[in-house]
Length: 293
Image (cartoon, rainbow, N blue to C red; front, side):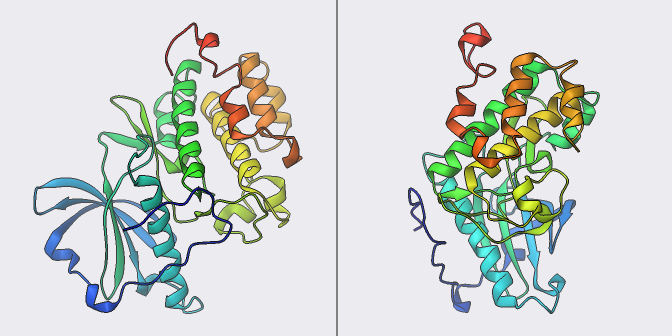
């Protein structure tokens, strides 16, 4: 049984299950269409044979890992992401985070079995389907859900570290949002992180402190990611440079623009906390005329 801590100063100690715990994935699940690839893994639609439930299977294969990366390191990374997802999915769970239903390991792979909300697309594609940018009310509703998910993760001791439009699923029939992909996640703490994963080091949408390979902190980094996401939703593109913030000021409501600019402050110490973002006038209930989020 996994119990989520409040705030972790150090990454959790994870004991790899012994080999006699191995289960045969093919006996319990049937893989269907591949719906995404990234890194050393792939995501498939699948079916749980016991009850025909449609599921989302994240399959991590040993034979796709470069020989320069020891299998033990790769396994630790995969199992930590599973552990972090277990923490955030323990009751009471958050409806804006993908639910982990099961996970299995066999001799060639680790598989994370998750819920499959349908019909759904990632937020990046949803924005394109909506004509390249969302209406302000649409953007607000989705942003509020992601914000709730972030608060839940941090309260459960998890720092997602890779919040972006590709890692948000939108159920198109309801516009309900779900945060996915905890593959870059880490234990949440108030100190500085020094490791840089994947695109965080060079991405044009990464905070300056990550691009410059300086130490970075969970809350300012998350605030930056939320600002980039909101910018993308209301403008249809990523803020490649701060000239773009001047362009968005011509069309975006001033309250929305103010929140984006605060989240994208170059100095991480000047960015708002997650609680300050949640209390921003653009998100406040009285600003919405009394409507629920």
